[in-house]
Image (cartoon, rainbow, N blue to C red):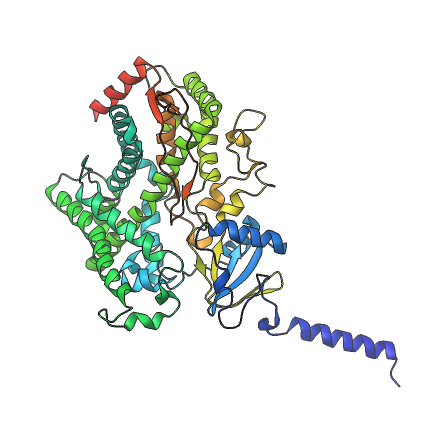
Length: 512
């Protein structure tokens, strides 16, 4: 008769083997709010400031990964940098797709944008094209343009300081249209800016979570537009016209300038120059056109959001502004503007840029990823087709990484030696996305923001206005939730720091 201990040991080994070999679907889903039959968490889903609700659920459940289900759609919220990096970076082969986006991609014509399209050959081709021109060394070619449009921006602030928000949007458009196409932007009623702004507004409306039932029931896209309840089809048709104009108008203009020999160097000109080596010229042109349009889509609203937040932060933190100006005055020669080469000697200015992007980050939920197959993580099952939502807001307001996370404290990034402290987590590791979907234009975007912030601090004092009775007008510090969050309109005073600063601004603008 067999020894009972040996039998027990064999049974245990078989049980362990079966447990390890069990199908993945035996693993539980990540925790989440209680689901109702059929509709799941449909009634729980927030309609604004979703990132705060998700963070609250994660804290209640004691988990930095949670699962939601909305009418059969699996949603996984990643509430910490650790989870996002492990899933979206280390498991990137599974989690690099995009949600289907029926309204935006299939009805509004945004399926040309590699930022929104499914993971595949088209995506690889466009991203490869982008990275050829915007790796860190290549991006330096565009720094003279970034400096030029920044100096023109300072002059517009000098002439009409109350229209600062309009000037910031003009700066963003001038920068990206110059880099992407080599096109100069008109002061008012620029056709390329107007086309792009209409397209971006409609994109924000079309991509808003829960805005259109067709996202949950894709078959609705086949309804005739005249049918009652199919108003979304009529909207999509009009909005598709805007996305087409944004994609075609500046590209046609750039090609005309190139053919006339008057084009400025740009992504389009550099890319078209290489077409002699291409086998299929028409196909390569299409890729260049789509990639350039994607560039505008990703850069404009984010730049506007960051620079508006910077001004708001300076109103709330005059001591930080004074410290940065003192640093600039000690490094930059009198009568000169900060240069890109000054970055290493202006660590507190860099800290202000980092803290601005952390404090009120542009895209609190990033752009969702999607899973192309099932995965198991920490013993939890991630269903195939899950929408993976990185809660970037929660990551950048994590008390362990950033004590007093809701306070604007650029000094948190400064070490004892007075330089940027490498031990403090760089917010840009989350801000620009994860894995294979990380923003390829992050180097260019950061440099545009840095030179604008450094230049504004060098020549302007940014202060709160006062009313007719001498009372300080406080901003609300409220934000408008959107694809790219922006501060609610607020008043501020932008005044040259000195007569010399005013002369510098006028002189620099006249040189360009």
